[in-house]
Image (cartoon, rainbow, N blue to C red; front, side):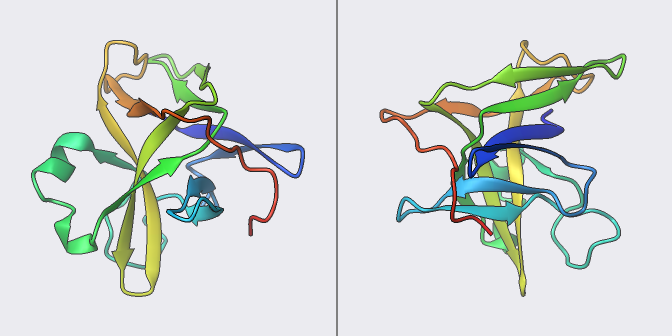
Length: 148
């Protein structure tokens, strides 16, 4: 389900987890720049975007996200974490040509990032959901600096 992510900034390995209301994930802009975007929305946070940090691929295709002007983005991380049905964490590495598909949702002044998920037999999470991992034809830059 992707409850955590690992990436590098300025040579420092960062691990972030969705429960942290300050969690941000690195995305690649159309200009090839990398920026950190707030990951999802928690109950305590303002706005009208859905609570949580994930967007089901089928809900995107059915138009449920339409009112939030959804935009697909590439989430550029080194690894993601998923908890199995017993609550044990497992980390899954991505190679430099892989990225996780994300969805940027806009709600007035708020911009939030959601991890796109799909059913996948590789998932060890009780939901059977897995982040949508895609492959690029090029080697993707990994965050190193210039992020806020």
